Length: 466
Image 1 (spheres, one colour):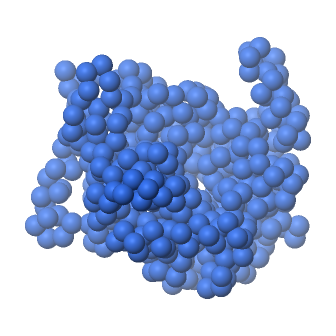
Image 2 (cartoon, helix red, strand yellow):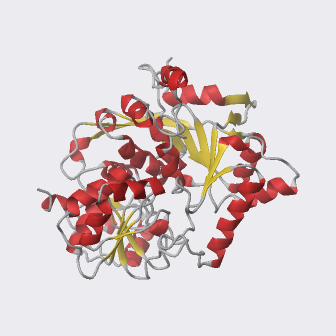
Image 3 (cartoon, rainbow, N blue to C red):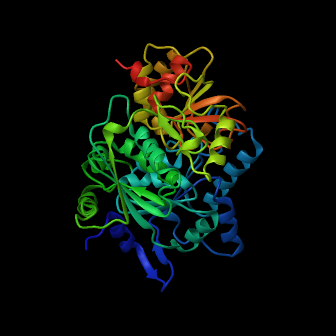
Protein backbone atom coordinates (compact mmCIF):
# COMPACT_ATOMS: atom_id res chain seq x y z
CA UNK A 1 0.00 0.00 0.00
CA UNK A 2 1.26 3.46 -0.90
CA UNK A 3 2.18 6.23 1.50
CA UNK A 4 0.52 9.57 2.02
CA UNK A 5 2.52 12.79 1.98
CA UNK A 6 2.13 12.90 5.76
CA UNK A 7 3.43 9.33 6.11
CA UNK A 8 6.56 10.11 4.12
CA UNK A 9 7.51 13.10 6.25
CA UNK A 10 6.50 11.49 9.56
CA UNK A 11 8.42 8.28 8.96
CA UNK A 12 11.58 10.16 8.02
CA UNK A 13 11.53 12.08 11.31
CA UNK A 14 10.87 9.24 13.77
CA UNK A 15 13.76 8.90 16.20
CA UNK A 16 12.13 6.14 18.22
CA UNK A 17 8.72 4.52 18.50
CA UNK A 18 7.52 3.56 21.96
CA UNK A 19 5.55 0.31 22.09
CA UNK A 20 1.84 1.09 22.54
CA UNK A 21 2.79 4.74 22.93
CA UNK A 22 3.84 7.87 21.08
CA UNK A 23 6.82 8.38 18.81
CA UNK A 24 9.85 10.53 19.45
CA UNK A 25 9.68 12.94 16.50
CA UNK A 26 12.67 15.01 15.39
CA UNK A 27 11.91 18.70 14.79
CA UNK A 28 13.71 20.49 11.96
CA UNK A 29 12.72 24.05 12.75
CA UNK A 30 11.45 25.68 15.95
CA UNK A 31 9.80 29.11 15.66
CA UNK A 32 9.27 31.17 18.79
CA UNK A 33 7.74 34.51 19.81
CA UNK A 34 7.37 36.59 22.95
CA UNK A 35 4.17 35.07 24.38
CA UNK A 36 4.72 31.31 24.76
CA UNK A 37 8.50 31.17 25.16
CA UNK A 38 9.32 32.92 28.50
CA UNK A 39 8.15 30.08 30.75
CA UNK A 40 9.99 27.53 28.58
CA UNK A 41 13.24 29.52 28.80
CA UNK A 42 12.75 29.79 32.57
CA UNK A 43 12.21 26.01 32.80
CA UNK A 44 15.40 25.28 30.88
CA UNK A 45 17.34 27.66 33.10
CA UNK A 46 15.89 26.19 36.29
CA UNK A 47 16.91 22.69 35.19
CA UNK A 48 20.39 23.95 34.28
CA UNK A 49 20.07 22.77 30.71
CA UNK A 50 21.36 24.37 27.54
CA UNK A 51 19.33 24.92 24.39
CA UNK A 52 20.20 21.77 22.45
CA UNK A 53 20.28 23.25 18.92
CA UNK A 54 19.88 27.05 18.99
CA UNK A 55 20.68 27.36 15.27
CA UNK A 56 17.42 25.57 14.45
CA UNK A 57 15.39 28.18 16.31
CA UNK A 58 14.15 31.48 14.85
CA UNK A 59 12.49 34.12 17.01
CA UNK A 60 10.42 37.21 16.29
CA UNK A 61 8.20 39.63 18.19
CA UNK A 62 4.66 39.77 16.83
CA UNK A 63 1.73 39.17 19.20
CA UNK A 64 2.22 42.03 21.65
CA UNK A 65 3.93 44.63 19.50
CA UNK A 66 2.26 47.95 18.71
CA UNK A 67 1.51 48.66 15.06
CA UNK A 68 2.06 52.42 15.25
CA UNK A 69 5.23 54.19 16.37
CA UNK A 70 7.23 51.00 16.77
CA UNK A 71 10.35 53.13 17.31
CA UNK A 72 8.93 54.25 20.67
CA UNK A 73 8.85 52.22 23.91
CA UNK A 74 5.88 49.85 24.14
CA UNK A 75 3.15 51.45 26.25
CA UNK A 76 1.44 48.35 27.66
CA UNK A 77 3.48 47.09 30.58
CA UNK A 78 2.97 43.34 30.07
CA UNK A 79 3.64 43.61 26.34
CA UNK A 80 6.85 45.55 26.95
CA UNK A 81 8.06 43.02 29.53
CA UNK A 82 7.37 40.07 27.23
CA UNK A 83 9.22 41.64 24.29
CA UNK A 84 12.18 42.63 26.49
CA UNK A 85 12.27 39.11 27.97
CA UNK A 86 12.42 37.60 24.48
CA UNK A 87 15.33 39.88 23.58
CA UNK A 88 17.25 38.86 26.70
CA UNK A 89 16.50 35.14 26.34
CA UNK A 90 17.61 35.06 22.71
CA UNK A 91 20.83 36.96 23.52
CA UNK A 92 21.65 34.60 26.39
CA UNK A 93 21.05 31.49 24.28
CA UNK A 94 22.53 32.58 20.93
CA UNK A 95 19.16 32.44 19.12
CA UNK A 96 18.45 34.46 15.96
CA UNK A 97 15.90 37.17 16.78
CA UNK A 98 14.05 39.38 14.34
CA UNK A 99 12.82 41.94 16.81
CA UNK A 100 11.25 45.37 16.38
CA UNK A 101 13.25 47.42 13.92
CA UNK A 102 14.80 44.40 12.23
CA UNK A 103 14.51 44.10 8.45
CA UNK A 104 12.91 40.64 8.84
CA UNK A 105 10.54 41.30 11.77
CA UNK A 106 6.94 40.26 11.37
CA UNK A 107 4.30 37.68 12.19
CA UNK A 108 6.05 34.38 12.75
CA UNK A 109 3.94 32.51 10.18
CA UNK A 110 4.54 35.18 7.55
CA UNK A 111 8.30 35.57 7.88
CA UNK A 112 9.10 31.83 7.88
CA UNK A 113 7.82 31.29 4.33
CA UNK A 114 8.90 34.64 2.87
CA UNK A 115 12.47 34.15 4.08
CA UNK A 116 12.71 30.58 2.83
CA UNK A 117 13.10 29.23 6.37
CA UNK A 118 10.02 27.07 5.74
CA UNK A 119 10.86 24.29 3.27
CA UNK A 120 9.15 21.12 1.98
CA UNK A 121 9.53 17.93 3.99
CA UNK A 122 10.29 19.68 7.27
CA UNK A 123 8.79 19.22 10.69
CA UNK A 124 8.08 22.67 12.11
CA UNK A 125 6.67 23.64 15.49
CA UNK A 126 5.85 26.87 17.28
CA UNK A 127 4.06 27.79 20.48
CA UNK A 128 1.18 29.08 18.37
CA UNK A 129 -1.80 27.16 17.02
CA UNK A 130 -1.59 28.62 13.49
CA UNK A 131 1.74 26.94 12.79
CA UNK A 132 -0.35 24.82 10.42
CA UNK A 133 0.22 27.67 7.92
CA UNK A 134 3.62 26.23 6.99
CA UNK A 135 1.99 22.99 5.84
CA UNK A 136 1.26 24.80 2.56
CA UNK A 137 4.85 23.94 1.60
CA UNK A 138 4.47 20.21 2.19
CA UNK A 139 5.55 20.25 5.85
CA UNK A 140 4.26 18.68 9.02
CA UNK A 141 3.76 21.90 10.98
CA UNK A 142 1.77 22.24 14.18
CA UNK A 143 1.37 24.34 17.29
CA UNK A 144 2.67 23.21 20.68
CA UNK A 145 2.18 24.20 24.30
CA UNK A 146 4.75 25.87 26.53
CA UNK A 147 5.89 22.62 28.15
CA UNK A 148 6.49 21.22 24.65
CA UNK A 149 8.42 24.36 23.69
CA UNK A 150 10.70 23.53 26.63
CA UNK A 151 10.99 19.92 25.42
CA UNK A 152 12.14 21.05 21.97
CA UNK A 153 14.58 23.51 23.56
CA UNK A 154 16.13 20.64 25.51
CA UNK A 155 16.09 17.84 22.93
CA UNK A 156 15.02 19.12 19.47
CA UNK A 157 12.41 16.34 19.66
CA UNK A 158 8.81 15.87 20.73
CA UNK A 159 6.68 12.98 21.91
CA UNK A 160 3.86 12.72 19.40
CA UNK A 161 1.09 10.25 18.61
CA UNK A 162 0.51 9.87 14.89
CA UNK A 163 -2.87 11.39 13.96
CA UNK A 164 -5.50 9.97 11.62
CA UNK A 165 -5.44 11.34 8.10
CA UNK A 166 -8.07 13.13 6.05
CA UNK A 167 -7.91 14.37 2.47
CA UNK A 168 -10.11 17.24 1.36
CA UNK A 169 -10.35 17.41 -2.43
CA UNK A 170 -11.49 20.69 -3.95
CA UNK A 171 -11.99 20.56 -7.71
CA UNK A 172 -13.18 22.98 -10.36
CA UNK A 173 -12.94 26.68 -11.05
CA UNK A 174 -13.72 29.29 -8.41
CA UNK A 175 -16.49 31.78 -9.07
CA UNK A 176 -15.85 35.50 -9.44
CA UNK A 177 -15.09 37.15 -6.10
CA UNK A 178 -14.25 33.83 -4.40
CA UNK A 179 -10.81 33.34 -2.88
CA UNK A 180 -8.84 30.95 -0.68
CA UNK A 181 -10.37 32.37 2.51
CA UNK A 182 -13.80 31.53 1.13
CA UNK A 183 -12.66 27.97 0.40
CA UNK A 184 -11.63 27.30 3.97
CA UNK A 185 -14.64 29.09 5.49
CA UNK A 186 -16.87 27.02 3.23
CA UNK A 187 -15.18 23.79 4.35
CA UNK A 188 -15.64 24.86 7.97
CA UNK A 189 -19.32 25.62 7.40
CA UNK A 190 -19.80 22.09 6.06
CA UNK A 191 -17.79 20.03 8.56
CA UNK A 192 -17.94 22.40 11.60
CA UNK A 193 -15.23 23.73 13.87
CA UNK A 194 -14.63 20.20 15.19
CA UNK A 195 -15.05 18.27 11.96
CA UNK A 196 -11.36 17.40 11.54
CA UNK A 197 -10.49 16.84 15.18
CA UNK A 198 -7.67 14.34 15.53
CA UNK A 199 -6.72 14.45 11.84
CA UNK A 200 -3.86 15.65 9.74
CA UNK A 201 -5.58 17.16 6.70
CA UNK A 202 -4.13 17.11 3.20
CA UNK A 203 -5.74 19.52 0.74
CA UNK A 204 -5.75 18.34 -2.86
CA UNK A 205 -7.58 18.75 -6.16
CA UNK A 206 -7.37 21.08 -9.14
CA UNK A 207 -8.64 24.12 -7.24
CA UNK A 208 -5.90 23.79 -4.63
CA UNK A 209 -3.26 23.21 -7.32
CA UNK A 210 -4.29 26.45 -9.05
CA UNK A 211 -3.83 28.52 -5.90
CA UNK A 212 -0.77 30.68 -5.35
CA UNK A 213 1.51 29.89 -2.40
CA UNK A 214 0.07 32.76 -0.39
CA UNK A 215 -3.46 31.50 -1.00
CA UNK A 216 -2.42 27.97 0.00
CA UNK A 217 -1.05 29.37 3.25
CA UNK A 218 -4.46 30.91 4.02
CA UNK A 219 -6.13 27.50 3.63
CA UNK A 220 -3.59 25.62 5.75
CA UNK A 221 -3.58 28.40 8.35
CA UNK A 222 -7.19 27.70 9.29
CA UNK A 223 -6.84 23.91 9.48
CA UNK A 224 -6.62 24.28 13.23
CA UNK A 225 -10.04 25.97 13.20
CA UNK A 226 -11.65 22.70 12.11
CA UNK A 227 -9.86 20.86 14.91
CA UNK A 228 -7.10 19.40 12.74
CA UNK A 229 -3.64 18.74 14.13
CA UNK A 230 -2.17 20.20 10.96
CA UNK A 231 -2.92 20.87 7.31
CA UNK A 232 -0.63 20.33 4.36
CA UNK A 233 -0.42 20.55 0.57
CA UNK A 234 1.99 18.60 -1.62
CA UNK A 235 4.76 20.83 -3.01
CA UNK A 236 4.91 21.44 -6.76
CA UNK A 237 6.38 23.90 -9.25
CA UNK A 238 4.40 26.72 -7.64
CA UNK A 239 6.13 25.92 -4.35
CA UNK A 240 9.58 25.62 -5.85
CA UNK A 241 9.28 28.87 -7.83
CA UNK A 242 8.15 30.69 -4.68
CA UNK A 243 11.12 29.46 -2.65
CA UNK A 244 13.85 29.92 -5.25
CA UNK A 245 16.10 32.82 -4.34
CA UNK A 246 14.63 33.37 -0.88
CA UNK A 247 17.31 34.41 1.68
CA UNK A 248 17.44 31.06 3.51
CA UNK A 249 16.49 28.73 0.67
CA UNK A 250 19.21 26.34 -0.55
CA UNK A 251 21.58 27.72 -3.19
CA UNK A 252 23.42 26.25 -6.19
CA UNK A 253 24.10 22.49 -5.81
CA UNK A 254 22.22 22.43 -2.51
CA UNK A 255 19.15 23.76 -4.35
CA UNK A 256 19.38 21.01 -6.98
CA UNK A 257 19.73 18.32 -4.31
CA UNK A 258 16.86 19.74 -2.27
CA UNK A 259 14.64 19.94 -5.35
CA UNK A 260 15.24 16.27 -6.11
CA UNK A 261 14.05 15.36 -2.62
CA UNK A 262 11.10 17.76 -2.60
CA UNK A 263 9.73 16.29 -5.83
CA UNK A 264 9.23 12.98 -4.00
CA UNK A 265 6.82 14.59 -1.56
CA UNK A 266 3.31 13.60 -2.67
CA UNK A 267 0.70 11.05 -1.71
CA UNK A 268 1.00 7.87 -3.73
CA UNK A 269 -1.91 6.97 -6.00
CA UNK A 270 -2.75 3.97 -3.85
CA UNK A 271 -2.37 5.77 -0.51
CA UNK A 272 -5.36 5.32 1.78
CA UNK A 273 -6.81 8.06 3.99
CA UNK A 274 -8.99 7.48 7.03
CA UNK A 275 -11.52 9.91 5.58
CA UNK A 276 -11.97 11.79 2.29
CA UNK A 277 -14.18 14.78 1.52
CA UNK A 278 -14.95 16.06 -1.98
CA UNK A 279 -15.95 19.66 -2.68
CA UNK A 280 -17.03 21.31 -5.92
CA UNK A 281 -15.44 24.77 -6.19
CA UNK A 282 -18.47 26.03 -8.13
CA UNK A 283 -20.59 25.62 -4.97
CA UNK A 284 -18.54 28.17 -3.05
CA UNK A 285 -19.66 31.79 -2.87
CA UNK A 286 -18.11 34.69 -0.90
CA UNK A 287 -18.37 33.65 2.75
CA UNK A 288 -19.06 35.49 5.99
CA UNK A 289 -19.33 34.23 9.58
CA UNK A 290 -22.29 35.12 11.77
CA UNK A 291 -21.43 33.43 15.07
CA UNK A 292 -18.62 32.92 17.55
CA UNK A 293 -16.60 30.11 16.00
CA UNK A 294 -15.20 29.92 12.46
CA UNK A 295 -17.55 27.07 11.55
CA UNK A 296 -20.55 29.37 11.89
CA UNK A 297 -20.38 30.73 8.37
CA UNK A 298 -22.73 31.20 5.42
CA UNK A 299 -22.61 32.37 1.83
CA UNK A 300 -23.11 36.12 1.52
CA UNK A 301 -26.62 35.72 0.08
CA UNK A 302 -27.70 33.01 2.52
CA UNK A 303 -29.68 33.51 5.71
CA UNK A 304 -28.54 32.91 9.27
CA UNK A 305 -29.77 29.39 10.12
CA UNK A 306 -32.88 28.82 12.19
CA UNK A 307 -32.55 27.29 15.64
CA UNK A 308 -34.60 24.24 14.62
CA UNK A 309 -31.87 23.19 12.15
CA UNK A 310 -29.55 22.37 15.06
CA UNK A 311 -29.49 19.38 17.37
CA UNK A 312 -30.59 19.64 20.99
CA UNK A 313 -26.95 19.74 22.11
CA UNK A 314 -26.03 22.43 19.55
CA UNK A 315 -28.90 24.82 20.25
CA UNK A 316 -27.58 26.45 23.46
CA UNK A 317 -24.27 27.42 21.80
CA UNK A 318 -26.11 28.71 18.72
CA UNK A 319 -28.47 30.89 20.80
CA UNK A 320 -25.60 32.18 22.92
CA UNK A 321 -23.62 33.09 19.79
CA UNK A 322 -26.49 35.05 18.23
CA UNK A 323 -27.15 36.88 21.49
CA UNK A 324 -23.49 37.88 21.72
CA UNK A 325 -23.42 38.96 18.07
CA UNK A 326 -26.73 40.82 18.27
CA UNK A 327 -28.08 38.94 15.24
CA UNK A 328 -31.33 37.08 14.55
CA UNK A 329 -31.95 33.56 13.27
CA UNK A 330 -33.39 33.29 9.77
CA UNK A 331 -32.30 36.81 8.82
CA UNK A 332 -29.96 38.01 6.09
CA UNK A 333 -26.50 39.11 7.16
CA UNK A 334 -25.93 41.12 4.01
CA UNK A 335 -26.57 44.77 4.78
CA UNK A 336 -25.48 44.54 8.43
CA UNK A 337 -23.75 47.79 9.39
CA UNK A 338 -20.11 47.46 10.43
CA UNK A 339 -17.84 49.77 12.43
CA UNK A 340 -14.32 48.46 11.86
CA UNK A 341 -12.44 46.65 9.12
CA UNK A 342 -9.26 44.73 9.95
CA UNK A 343 -7.18 43.34 7.09
CA UNK A 344 -4.18 41.50 8.50
CA UNK A 345 -3.14 38.52 10.71
CA UNK A 346 -1.16 35.40 9.80
CA UNK A 347 -4.14 34.40 7.64
CA UNK A 348 -4.32 37.36 5.24
CA UNK A 349 -1.53 39.94 5.61
CA UNK A 350 0.79 39.04 2.75
CA UNK A 351 1.62 41.22 -0.24
CA UNK A 352 -0.86 39.33 -2.44
CA UNK A 353 -3.66 40.25 0.00
CA UNK A 354 -2.64 43.90 0.06
CA UNK A 355 -2.37 44.06 -3.73
CA UNK A 356 -5.82 42.55 -4.11
CA UNK A 357 -7.35 45.11 -1.77
CA UNK A 358 -5.43 48.02 -3.30
CA UNK A 359 -6.56 47.15 -6.83
CA UNK A 360 -10.15 47.03 -5.61
CA UNK A 361 -10.20 50.27 -3.59
CA UNK A 362 -8.16 52.41 -5.98
CA UNK A 363 -10.20 55.52 -6.69
CA UNK A 364 -12.77 54.68 -4.00
CA UNK A 365 -13.37 56.11 -0.52
CA UNK A 366 -14.15 54.28 2.71
CA UNK A 367 -17.51 54.90 4.39
CA UNK A 368 -17.27 57.89 6.72
CA UNK A 369 -18.21 56.02 9.89
CA UNK A 370 -15.92 53.00 9.38
CA UNK A 371 -12.37 52.73 10.71
CA UNK A 372 -10.04 50.63 8.52
CA UNK A 373 -6.78 49.10 9.68
CA UNK A 374 -4.46 47.42 7.18
CA UNK A 375 -1.66 45.62 8.99
CA UNK A 376 1.10 44.02 6.88
CA UNK A 377 2.43 40.69 8.06
CA UNK A 378 6.08 41.70 8.00
CA UNK A 379 8.56 44.50 7.41
CA UNK A 380 9.21 43.01 3.99
CA UNK A 381 5.51 43.18 3.09
CA UNK A 382 5.35 46.74 4.41
CA UNK A 383 8.39 47.77 2.37
CA UNK A 384 7.06 46.11 -0.77
CA UNK A 385 3.69 47.83 -0.34
CA UNK A 386 5.46 51.18 -0.22
CA UNK A 387 7.65 50.41 -3.20
CA UNK A 388 4.55 49.54 -5.25
CA UNK A 389 2.62 52.63 -4.13
CA UNK A 390 0.01 50.57 -2.30
CA UNK A 391 0.41 52.77 0.77
CA UNK A 392 -0.64 55.82 -1.26
CA UNK A 393 -3.75 54.02 -2.59
CA UNK A 394 -4.76 53.11 0.95
CA UNK A 395 -4.17 56.63 2.23
CA UNK A 396 -6.27 58.12 -0.57
CA UNK A 397 -9.09 55.69 0.28
CA UNK A 398 -8.96 56.63 3.97
CA UNK A 399 -7.43 53.30 5.03
CA UNK A 400 -4.71 53.30 7.69
CA UNK A 401 -1.63 51.24 6.79
CA UNK A 402 -0.04 50.32 10.10
CA UNK A 403 3.23 48.56 11.00
CA UNK A 404 3.70 44.76 11.14
CA UNK A 405 2.29 42.63 13.94
CA UNK A 406 -0.59 40.38 14.93
CA UNK A 407 -2.59 43.53 15.75
CA UNK A 408 -6.37 43.22 16.02
CA UNK A 409 -6.40 39.48 15.36
CA UNK A 410 -6.40 39.06 19.13
CA UNK A 411 -7.02 41.37 22.06
CA UNK A 412 -3.46 41.06 23.35
CA UNK A 413 -1.98 44.37 22.20
CA UNK A 414 -3.10 47.98 21.77
CA UNK A 415 -5.24 47.29 18.66
CA UNK A 416 -8.57 46.32 20.20
CA UNK A 417 -12.10 46.61 18.84
CA UNK A 418 -14.44 48.39 21.31
CA UNK A 419 -17.24 46.45 23.01
CA UNK A 420 -20.39 46.06 20.94
CA UNK A 421 -18.75 47.21 17.70
CA UNK A 422 -18.84 45.06 14.56
CA UNK A 423 -15.54 44.30 12.86
CA UNK A 424 -15.27 42.48 9.55
CA UNK A 425 -11.90 40.79 9.83
CA UNK A 426 -9.57 38.73 7.65
CA UNK A 427 -8.19 36.95 10.71
CA UNK A 428 -8.88 33.36 11.70
CA UNK A 429 -11.00 33.44 14.86
CA UNK A 430 -14.27 35.08 15.83
CA UNK A 431 -14.49 33.85 19.43
CA UNK A 432 -16.19 36.00 22.06
CA UNK A 433 -13.80 38.77 23.04
CA UNK A 434 -11.14 37.63 20.57
CA UNK A 435 -10.58 41.17 19.24
CA UNK A 436 -11.34 42.87 22.53
CA UNK A 437 -13.88 42.47 25.33
CA UNK A 438 -17.37 42.51 23.82
CA UNK A 439 -16.11 42.97 20.24
CA UNK A 440 -18.20 41.34 17.51
CA UNK A 441 -16.11 39.72 14.78
CA UNK A 442 -17.22 38.61 11.32
CA UNK A 443 -14.62 36.65 9.33
CA UNK A 444 -14.28 37.15 5.59
CA UNK A 445 -11.82 37.39 2.71
CA UNK A 446 -9.73 40.54 2.16
CA UNK A 447 -11.93 41.59 -0.76
CA UNK A 448 -15.15 41.10 1.22
CA UNK A 449 -13.61 43.17 4.02
CA UNK A 450 -12.63 45.88 1.54
CA UNK A 451 -16.15 45.96 0.09
CA UNK A 452 -17.56 46.47 3.60
CA UNK A 453 -15.07 49.27 4.20
CA UNK A 454 -16.31 51.10 1.11
CA UNK A 455 -20.04 50.60 1.69
CA UNK A 456 -20.08 50.64 5.50
CA UNK A 457 -22.02 47.38 5.62
CA UNK A 458 -21.64 43.70 4.79
CA UNK A 459 -21.75 43.59 1.02
CA UNK A 460 -21.54 41.00 -1.74
CA UNK A 461 -18.22 42.04 -3.26
CA UNK A 462 -19.34 40.69 -6.63
CA UNK A 463 -21.78 43.60 -6.87
CA UNK A 464 -18.81 46.00 -6.86
CA UNK A 465 -16.48 44.09 -9.18
CA UNK A 466 -16.14 45.27 -12.75
